[in-house]
Each structure stands twice: as C-alpha cells, then as structure tokens.
Image (tube, rainbow, N blue to C red):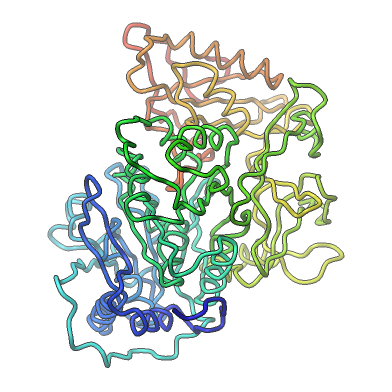
Length: 595
C-alpha cells in the first residue's frame, strides 16, 4: 500500500478514484447493509469507477460541465455511483434529502429554486414519495428526473470514456446545502481541492490508514455522512460499511454490532445517536459484541453533552469500548466539513466552568456547585487551519477564555454560497482588525483556551439577552427537557420574541414522551418546566407549548431548527399535544400569557 499524506498527490476526486481502481481494483470499497445487518450490496473500487463512467457516458448528452445535478437517493450504491458520475463529467453534484410526504416541511423546493439544476438523478424506489404527477411525467419541482438503477454487473466497454480530463482542484465538485437551522438553506460551493485538503486533515487527526474501516449510518446527503463517512475511506483506500439512517433509528445497537462484525475503527455521529444507543440498550442485543477495535469516534454536527459521553462510555465499556475513543469535533459546511477534534487516544476534554460568568462572556472556574456548567472541548484546529474568537461588533480578537464568534481561515474553506455574492463576501471574506487575510465567519459563539482547545457555547443568532445577560438556548432546552419524566429529552426548542415594552419574552416548545406512560397531565409538565427554568436560570417563561413526539423541526443532522419552530409557533401550526383525559386550554401560539 502506498504511503499516505500528500494532499497534492491528486488533482481531483476523479483522479483519486482512478488510482484506487488501478491499485486496489478487486478490494471492496463499499458494503451496504440491510435488515438485521444482512449485506445487500457491495462495490469494489474498480466496480465503482466502471459504473460511474458508464453512467457518465449516458448523462453526457444531457449534462454539460458546470451543470447542477440533483442526487435523490437513499443510502445505496447508486448514490455513490451517481456522485462520481457527476464528477467525471465536470458537473456539480447537489445531494438533497429524500422527499417528504409532508410537503410543508420539504426544503428541497427552495434548494432547487436556488441552484437551478439541469437534471435530477433519482432512485426508482422513491416513486411513492414523489408527487403523484411524477409517475406520468417524471419531474421533481419542475426538474426532469432520470431514474438510476445499477445493472447487476458493471459494463465492460467504458474504459476509454474520457469526457473531461481537465478537472482540477479549483473546479466545483458539489454544492453542500446548509442545514437551515437558522436560515434558508444556502449552497456551499465545495471544490475538489477543498475536499482533498479536508480529507487529509481527517486522516491526520484520526491517524487513519488503509486498514481504518469506517462504519456509518448518517445520510449521504449530509456533509458528515458524505465526507467523513463515505469519501474519507475512499481517500484512504479503506473499507466503508454503511447502513440506512432509518435502520439506525429503529435499531441503533445494530450500528455497534456492525462495528464489531467488520472490525470497524472509525465512526462518526451526532450527540443524539450516542444518547439513543444508551436509551435502547439491551444486554441480549449486545451479546458477543466486542468494540475494542473502535479507534476513533467523531462526535459532532450538534452540541456535544458531557453527560451523553459519560453515559455512553459507562454503558459500553463492558463491551470493550475505550473511553478515549470518543472525540468531540467541530465542523461546518462552509469549511467543507471538518474543523477541529482531539488527537487519537486523548478522549473528551470536559471543563467545569461558571455558568454565571459564561453569561457575561467569560470562561472561568465556578465559585459554587450551583454555578457549575460542564463545557465539552471540540479539540484543536485541523492542519492548515487557523481559529480566532472575535468580537462580532468590533471585529477584534478577544482574549483566550473570552466568548467571541469563531472565525477561521485555511485551504479547506469553501468558495462561498452559490449565487449569493454579497452574502459570500460578508461570511467568507471577513477581516479581523490588526490581522492579515480573509476569514470565514462561522456564526458560532465559543472560546479558545491557552492551548488552542475550542469550546462552542451557542449560535450568534440564537442568543437570548435578558437584562443584559446572555442566555444560550441549548442550556434552557436541556433544563426543560430533563426536568420531568413525561418530557422527551433533547427535543425542546427555546427562543425569544420582543414584547411591546422592549424586553425579550421567552417561549418553550417541548415534545412529550411517546404514549405518556406515566399518565402525566399537561399542567403538571408545564409547571415543572416553568419552575426548572426559574430556579436554574432566574428567568420567567411567558409561553410553554407541549407538542406531539416527532414533530419538533430538526435538520438532517439533528440540530433543532429554532427559527422554523418560531415561525410555526407564530403561525399557529405547531402540532400540539393534549393528554387524552386532561386536555388543556388551547391558546393561540402567537399570544403570550397562556400556559
């Protein structure tokens, strides 16, 4: 196996794939698992390239270089093949989430309007999710659809197909649409060079090589699922084992069983996935499972909770899990995906700080037990990246340990937002007073300590300011969702709206547990939320809305969509929950002073 480490070795992912197909032709590249971890499909490196070139040849009369092409697939081989077929042609791949039957929550229409795709490549199995008219004239939001189904064996006559050999590092590879947690989705322009640089950062931070089997379940239209989960093993020449997101949600322990079966070394997931594994733990489902090969676990895509890491470690340590395997990480689409994480075998860094001092912008030691908050470190910046905490108003760097907006610069920072030059200039080409060069504004608030460890504390747009004190909504959400057994943990959205007197009025939207096994009344749960936030944060909540389980708006990675929740609340469109025998008075969501 060749020596890894030269990010300049390849000009594009197309060249990378060709090298893998030549050097490791018969080695399995991707394995796709179905129900009960049955292997449904697999692709060798050579099969992947051959299928991709065959599809590219079919698409060549329809798609020109630079055209945007939607990818509408579940987790299956056709997605990977279609992605690389676009790259072979020099087209710009646009992975999007699967269509939702609830059209009101389908963000794909906004994405399609934004990027004006020439064509949509679609899995035939999704026909029942498409609009009814799709069956007669296949279009999706007006975009022509081409069903893609791979033949049982790769064609043998595509070796000489060379539609565009000049694809280089500066060419766009794909548009990664932002999750829309705080605004309308925007298409981040990611080049081949951005990807190759970021993949090398991942290799270095995790100490990976061709033996580092990756096991994942995140959807491939999500940047963490696509880049960390699927493209990184290809970059390494390692095996990638994938199960479906739906399969994970129903049977989360299958993920751990797959790590055992395939001797997985690397896996990545948001915080909620680790929480879900603990909640669904059953000893009989883990019988014979050995997790000792699990070398590195990226925990990211949403706020990382210290309690989750502790619970996961305590639950699965008897099965060979090393506590140092878990590595909280930070990333965002605008930086391709990966920004920071800890080195291998270091484990999580949890700092005990003063909650009251943090509200005033400083990371300091707590003076009493009641003032303690655990803050999880997200590691050090990847190779070639520089991080800074910046006062967003004055655009000056703040001292170590002080809260600022996190800015970064480096070769994996993407090119901007598709079709939004003004917004791209403001976000991707910001300048710090007294510092050289252009910086990316992340919109995230955090601190850097003296060693360069990054701590994220919230989103700039979501901060709630009451009487001059900053309150981070995720802190209030944790307090609310953990205060009563009838409430669903980590399924809460807190936001504020200005009142007529200029003060901020706080709204809590909280899911209840499925089935309400304790028979709790709405009034009991609402009173518990109100008391917990008053006692822990000295805040008065003006409106609390209980909603049905599974209806809180979240992004594909599990981030709470507070802005969308706020809009649904204002429009009176939240799916309210009322106990069967203890119905509460319905109050218009736009009115304060209700429940």
